[in-house]
Length: 617
Image (cartoon, rainbow, N blue to C red):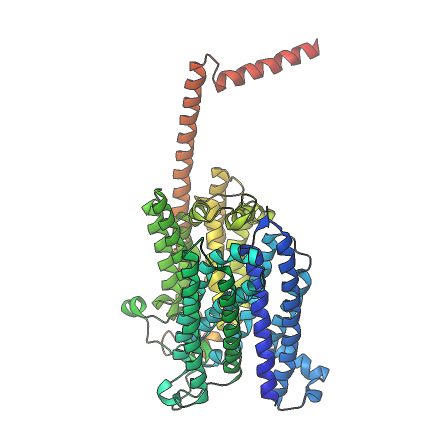
């Protein structure tokens, strides 16, 4: 009975979270706004968000109670004891994630009642996506082998389902006028989401199931049924695109019925997913002997590193790969849009962006990423690639400029739209704060001390989500810093080249100080993580840690020197352009019989001097 209640509460929590996310998606990006403010239709959708989020909160709360009751095999009256609940919510990882999700649902329910702009709606959407995906890290996938593959694929699966299922349900709840406006744009999102759902679902099933052994189990039957229904839903999506391609002869009555049926099928798929997530998959086969590396890092211990092994080893971190594929797909689509429009995009920027993405993949899923789990020295190499080398390639690829040139414009002349949201974000107070060169430097170098000289490093290395957070932080901090220093994308504040050079020298000094401090350590800073792996090579952990400090010093200075040279080149080019501009302006003023800028400035100084003499007299 309790297990059925767990499944039911999880189903209602998932369904209501999908409705919340779909409605926020419609509110932020699909329906029309009025110069960034919610329209009358938007205010009606806002009430749907509030109700569904409130339902999400209550069903998540019930799911916590039923899950704890099922784990302890105790009646509800027993698990309502404050001590038992407190231990589950604050000391057990599963309880912490479920409690976090419940609190976010309540936050969305309350804050959605007062939001009035599409920008804040987009922020709520991001927060909701984080909440709905949080329990993934404590799912059955997290306890299986191939952690990065299983967890990453399930994470992408849940996010893509949220967009696909939630978006279709939200479309079914819209009135016909809003549906006509929203459907074409959602069709593009649904296509990407459907592809992600299928690929991530196949990868997750392959990581968790041995179909040869589990073919006759009810779990496998449900998985197969879910695949069949997904194919049916893809057919519905195909029909949608055909309807839209037939504009303006779209039969909106038939389209409404099609969307309603699709939404109903998706609700059924959500129920199947809830059952799967509430039941342990069949075992993959015979028992394997305990492997410390696999238990701690989620990867079997590789052999001692060699150049060949570093170059060719690969263990896919599906979540990071998914993010990289999305970034590459969006970049390619932007270049294609420009090309079709007859504009040109510099090939050097595309190559630079591709090199940056390749460096990230090598440092997270490639051989460098594999060995970064097992030795501090290789972890530091990966850190330098993610934080120092790859960001330069990404920044010089000018992705923001490409987005501004290719994102959809306003559909009615008053809508802010996606491009308008990006422009608003670039000019926001938050952007002005983080692009301050001192703030960017503090994030870039200051986080090194906060991570490696506190207990954070050891704690984050112990979990897949901690390792993922570190990697993403390294990438974003590096992108921010080099965007301020050598970036070609629009910047909300113009930083003088001399200030950039001073910041670069400061970064070089701070990084050198950090590396020397790391080389001088006499105790391990990993909280026992590397010792627990029981690696058979590089047995002197402290020497390997000190070698990591030396690597950080050597690899950290080179990119900063490259950035310093690039800053000098940009400074000279800007001066050259300014001189040419002044010359052109002088020639134009002379042709009109007017004095040039220097002569005007001298006349201005003479007038001030004359006024000063008259005042003294």
